Amino acid sequence: MHRHAKMVGVMPTTALPVVPAEAVTSPDAVTSPQAPARPGRPAMPPQHLADLDLAGRRAWLTELGHKAYRADQISRHYFGRLVRDPAAMTDIPAADRDRLAAAVLPPLLTQVRERTCDGGATRKSLWRLHDGSLIESVLMGYPDRVTVCVSSQAGCGMGCPFCATGQGGLRRNLSTAEIVDQVVRSAEVAASGVLSSGSAGGPGGPRATVPSRLSHVVFMGMGEPLANYARVVAALRRLVAPPPEGLGLSARHLTVSTVGLVPAIRRLAEENLPVTLALSLHAPDDDLRDELVPVNERWKVAEVLQAAWDYAARSGRRVSIEYALIRGVNDQPWRADLLGRLLAGKLAHVNLIPLNPTPGSRWDASTKPVEREFVRRLRAAGVATTVRDTRGREIDGACGQLAASEPTLPSFPLTSEGTVRRGGPVIDTGASVAQTRSLVQDPVGIPGKLVQSGWADSRGLGGKAKR
Ligand code: SAH
Ligand code: SF4
Image (tube, rainbow, N blue to C red; front, side, top):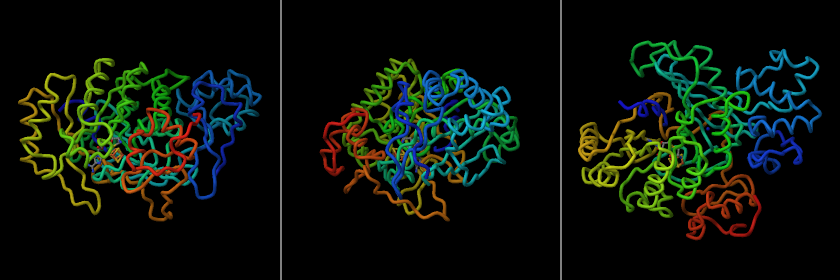
């Protein structure tokens, strides 16, 4: 099995912002807190040190009346030593520690629940955010690596009908720090050694020692990462920057999975961040892809594949084509042949995902013989093909199963201000109309044609807006 196939085994969910605007001095200011909270509305969290690059943190702490080098010290604790408890920051004077940590390390993720399988080698966490939003991440230990699957949004607005996350719509984008903190918290768990207790080879597999250092991150949890572009890219920069600026992961070990927002793929190629791109294709023909991946009505198969090949050429990295095999829907031999013709000779490999049926869905996974025939035809066309393992399935932690429900909580309203919905899928919203407008202006945000095509209402859309 190809490394990637195992790596992405899963998948694949009020405090007011407290930072004065002038404190945001970094170019990453876009990742900072957004609109003020309103009762019942989802709101961005308080600013956290992981929202900013190191220069931004130094400027912020200076404004708060601290020495600039405290930014380096506290960053070294958070990113280098995975320490968040001020009492353990003994290089910072005792009188300053609590105030400093309270200012720049506000708690972002409260663990509501952890479910484990594979004897503890796979662990799904349900996190509550400061505004009550729920997200999930999944940590997977393997004999040769530790991977975390993170969420980039609370919910998702892309409306793919086979995906549990997509059924609830979008609540809000995550901040950069909310994304990064999922990785840091997971790295802490990996460092504790608990992943080694179980069958790291997967269900029923042998016990194996798992590395204690988290090494891989896949953006295959809840949300469409490229619909939260600026914050996701800032998070990627934090993940690759060496400590104290960031976690020091290899860009080659980061995978961003997208439904195929073409302008965003093109923009990502220019970021000089050679992360692996995974493209959720699911159908080789527009007729079917329009149905399975509604954003295909805006960017067709040929266009999205061209963007993927340009990304591969630019990054030097093979693109992973994700294809959830759905019984009787997209698993016909002719579709395998068509897919093979589209991909032959390209810098790509196919990751087939046995569909995880979502509750109430009329769809099911393909049968094993059909799956084998699909693989055979793709390979016969010269296309590297793997079937993804189903890590986390039994704890609803596998691809498309993340729904972040918590029975004791009231369900949240999905029509927050800025949410754009009518008839079709809910397209990226964020917290405010101003933000929504800016996304329309931004080629990476809401696809303009979707807005025109009636998926979005006209509330505030189309006007000029600043980011
Ligand atoms: N929004 C991004 C990343 C999150 S989804 C994307 O769509 O690419 C991660 C992967 O899980 C995607 O490839 C997605 O198509 C797939 N997926 C969603 N629902 C699924 C399901 N029910 N069964 C199998 N895979 C699913
Ligand atoms: Fe969103 Fe990805 Fe699910 Fe589609 S498959 S609804 S893009 S999370």
